[in-house]
Each structure stands twice: as structure tokens, then as C-alpha cells.
Amino acid sequence: MGKKSRGRAHVRGALPVQETNVEDGVRKPLSRQKRSEVNSLVERLLKVSSTILPAPHADKEWESHLKIEKLVEKIRKIESDMKIPVADRRAYIEEFTTWMKVYGAEIDGVKISHFPGYGYGIEAEKNFAQGDLLLAVPRKVMLTTENIQDSLLDPLFRTDAMLQHMPNVALSLLLLVEKFKADSFWKPYIAVLPTEYTTVLYFKTNELQELKGSPSLEPALKQCRNIARQYAYFSTLFQKSSDPASVLLREVFTYEQYCWAVSTVMTRQNFVPSSDGGTMLNALIPMWDMCNHNNGKLSTDFNAEQNRSECMACRDYQAGEQIFISYGPRTNSEFFVHNGFVYPDNEHDGLRLRLGISRDDPLQPERAQLLGRLGIPASGDFMLKKGPDPVDGRLLAFLRVFNMGPDHLKHWLSSERSCDLVYPDCALTTEVESKMWIFLLNRIRLLQRAYTTTVEDDCKILKHAHLTPCYRMAVQLRVTEKKLLEAAEEYVKQRIKA
Ligand SMILES: C[S@@+](CC[C@H](N)C(=O)[O-])C[C@H]1O[C@@H](n2cnc3c(N)ncnc32)[C@H](O)[C@@H]1O
Image (cartoon, rainbow, N blue to C red; front, top):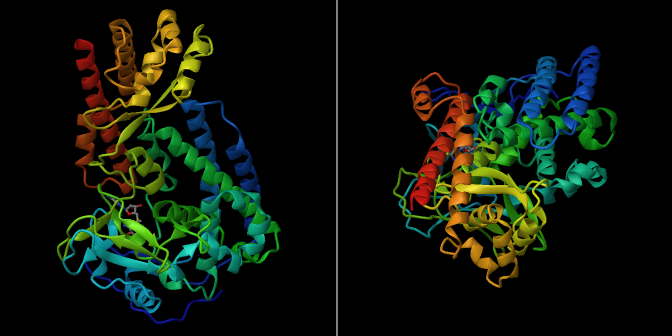
């Protein structure tokens, strides 16, 4: 495809230049030799990223990440020949807003503005009272997995198992198809999307290394490995298939483009009912997806009668204020891995604890049976929560069962009141109670010792102005984790004293 000739203003003002996804140069395919180099690197990447690692093993995961990174770096270097210069994201906001209104969006009273620390966001242009309609986005402008059936992706979608089973991956590829198609209906929307993200896929090795000791490192590395594997899979597929999507994407599909597409979807997607109401669809909802997150109630709903998503004010807003929505009760680790940000005031924060009954434990069958009765697995992920009650009923019951002796287990297995084990005031011997609090305290201290810095060190680091956004986020995340552990430690110490 040749250079775009559409005239537009390159607005350069006080704000940093925000690139768009609109090409501002000539797209160049790779030379034959470079294509074959990429293909052989991709083959190796597919192998390395598909290797099954031994169950949770941080060192092995890190080793594998370094191998993947090495290959990805080589691929990126060659693929940089395919890079297309892009223009200012901000210059397209007006065109996008007009497009939204033409297709029936109700967005009077709000506008897109830049907010330091958040990127773009939605600003109130008038006062809103709690419960008022802030914006309404018709289905027509949404990009959903239902749009695949009328797109170039449809033939590939129908035959590819990964696309059939992973709607978020399918939506990512649909987005790429629409981005590179000459006459996409969604061009005005794609033009105002960010060109880069701060999801873990954009972290350099030294930035990810800042998470050593954190329980968030493992899901972050897994995410990087999964995306590298998917990239390698599709890169190979597009080179050899002749369906319309493969033909279109063959010359433009790079690791960077794939990271962009999946990051767009993972940081912005929502779910809406299908047109027949029978199922839920992964959807990109223009304009709504410009809202940033804070604590609060979910305030977006799909209005089936009007066939549109509606977002209500979850509190009063004054003109000039940034409007926030809640992305839901996620921990900071989840925000970090899936949404590309850390929210220090997160009231739903929590820290994953992996706990399990050892197979070598002679009482394993009894413990597993009792836990099973409570609907709790004998091994799995539990959560230490932020706030005054860090230990919820599920974790409490696990710890109790884990620390019971044979007589206690026998008693609770024959009791009709075993469900009481999830309640703090359940009548349990002090022997089991104190054993379990000591066990939890040791576990918390083990987690604390795994970090290589203290909260004080981290706070000093965060004062440096020159940190990259990804580096800053990694340090912010470990601060939230350490503070949570500190509070939980204090809570447990009080229980031991009592
Ligand atoms: C749905 S988009 C919101 C619009 C986005 N700010 C933009 O410029 O396009 C979600 C992204 O916004 C940013 N974001 C949302 N809430 C945030 C918060 N509370 N703090 C920092 N960044 C936030 C993160 O980069 C996140 O990936």
C-alpha cells in the first residue's frame, strides 16, 4: 500500500507528541533474505515458547524468558525494516468524535482530554449528577467478534482452532485486519488508539527484573511467553496460507504489531451481548474505552432495547473533572499484567498465595476430603487481601484444615458443622488456631524476604524523575505488594498475641 495522501494537521503543542496508528509513510515488505531469516527465527521461537516448563518454577520461567527475549530481539531488529512512520494521535480526535456522532453516539457533555499519568481520558464539559447518562455508544461503531463474519478474517477464523477457542486473540487479529485494510469502517477509531502500551509485553528485561521476588513475575512471564508463541504461530501461518487475512497481514505482521493488537484488546475490551442476545462477545467500545479507572461501582450496561452500551455517572461530576469508571474488582497484579497500570489506592488489592497439601502428608486424603466438602481445592491459589481483614473465609478454612491433627480432622469430617470452618468465630481448639497463624506468619515472612529491596528503597527510587514508565510501574507494584504484606503480618501477629 502506498503513502496516504489525506491532508491533516500535525498538531504540535505543549503536550508530548502522541503517535497515531495512521500510517504516515511507505510500507516496505522484507527482502527475501530477511524474510527467510525471520522465518527460521520464528520457527525456533515457536519451539522455545511451546516448551512445557516444570510446574511453578520461577528460575526455569526466567531462563525460558531470556531465551525467548533473545530470539524476539533478533526478530524485532530485522522486522524494523517493516516499520512505518506514524503521525500524531491527537490530530484525529475531532474526526473520531464527528464519526461517533454520525453513527448515533450520545457524547454531548464529555470530551477526550489528556491527563498526566493517565494518557487520554474523558473530561466532563458540564456538571453531571450521580446516575446521569455520561455516554451511549451504539453497537454499530463497536468492533466485536461478531464483526468477524463480515470481515476478511472470516475464512481463517472458520478453520483455525486457536481463533475459535480464544475470542480475545480473534478480536486482536480482527483489529489488525481493520488497521491494515484500506477502507475500514473503523479507521477513525483506530486512529485515536494509543500506538504503544505499558503492558508487560513492552517491558525490557531489566524492567521485568525489578519484579524478582514478586509473585507477579510468574504471571507476567507467562503472558510474555504466550504472546511470543501466538506471534510465532500466526507469523508462520500467514506466510503459508492463502486466505484473504493471511494475504493482507503477511507483509505487515510483526512481533511489535501483534503486541500492539493484543495490548489494545487486553487493556480496552469489554463484553456485550451478541445481536441475538444468546451469548457474550468480546468488544472494543469506542469512546467508552477512553475512560480511565478508579475505585467505584460498575456503571456500564448494555441497553438491549436501544442496542447500545450506556455509561452512567457513578458519582457527581463537575465540569472540567476527569470522569472515571471502574474496571472491576481486580488486584494490582492483575491490573499490571492485563491492563498495563498499577493503582496504589486499589481497594480490591490482594496478593496471591499458592498453597497446597503435600502428597507426602500422611493425612492428605482426610484434609483433601474435608476441603472438598467446603468446595476448596487441596492445592491452588488463595488471596491475602488489602484492608482490615486480609484473611478471607476460604484461606482461613484452608489454613485450619492444613494445620489440624488426626483427631481434629476426624472430628470435623464427622461433624455436620464443617461449613463453620470458613468463619472467624468457628469454635476450634487454640492449638490449631495458633499453629495456623504461625504457619501464615512464616509464609508472609518468606514472601517478604524474597524481595531484594525495602519499601524505603523503593520510595527513594520512585522520586527519580527519569524512570521509564515500565520501570516505574514495576517499582510501584512491589511497593503495593510489600505494604499489603506488612499489614497482613501485623494482623497475624495480633492474632498470635490474642
Ligand atoms: C481503557 S484505556 C483508557 C484510555 C487510555 N488512558 C488512553 O489514553 O487511551 C486503559 C488504559 O488507561 C490507563 N489507565 C486507566 N486507568 C488508569 C489509572 N487509574 N492509573 C493509570 N493509568 C490508567 C492505562 O494505561 C490503561 O491501560
